[in-house]
Length: 412
Image (cartoon, rainbow, N blue to C red; front, side, top):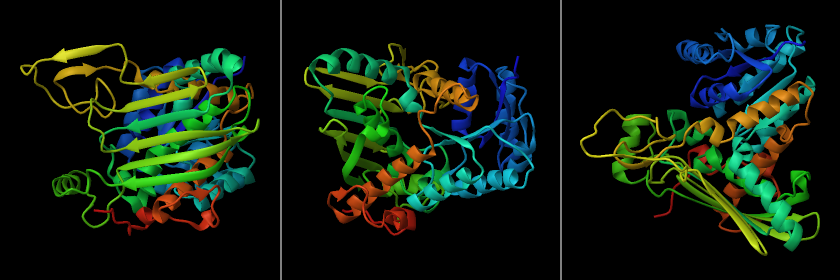
């Protein structure tokens, strides 16, 4: 009997903790450890893994130390965008020097901040022959997987392929300060969350069993705006709480993109995606729709089937025990039990464990991650030019959004 796959994490924030919680539903793999530049946070995340009995995890002193450990077979990259290049360089350098080996490397969205960086990451990893996995949890959400399978098996099989997909991810703003700073994160809400929604619409429009490339982007129309966080009251709030000055260097808090696709069977289909940091509601809301000639599907993560009510007399500290990015503790509140499962983390992690064990072909690789970043940059370019752009646009490898340069100014 072979030993379980040993997995370690780069990063110790909320994303890593979602994965660690999801690991309760993953077989044949143990969480071995965590590295973070914040040693206290790394130790806390490792302790979480031990408390959940998903592995005898420890905090590592460096990424190189993780790679060198023979108990670690694969690494999940969950650190901040601005550290992606240096994190990958340390992994690749350690392997290239013969100090360690890995069976695979998985990377959270987005793969990098722009196309140049994304291609650099993919090239570095390919130089040491690593199997890759691009972590896009929403494609693995049980609701998305079940809805897509049934729509294609019943509706599309009898009345024709779907022609319109919609997806959205909306909440009131990110957890950590670096997300808010375009020069660090690489943009605003478009770069942070459109990677989810843009890939979800392409996925839903792709026939099961066929590659994403069978639904090819040909044109992108993007729009960005700062609807809430550039208003004086919220500029002051953001400066105090997150250290970001949106009076001087704002990032967009709303983005929309329309992607026109050509399918392998000769159809023109449409994907519409929306993301927002200016959403007012119970907390994080994920949604998706798929429409065809005689059918449709829809999903809203806040329609969870469980609601609680707390009167004005129920008072307590703010938290996120009901739903991610929770905005209130009173009134009628939807609850998303086991968010890590509902959002797709469990299915995603189970899949990539099997990939790195050689039991399955990867559904998403770093190549897909590069394609997603290309779509995001095309959307930024379209928004800056105020027109639809052909995909992929010329010069996209060298393009850096104005938001990422700290020079973008919202209209009005």
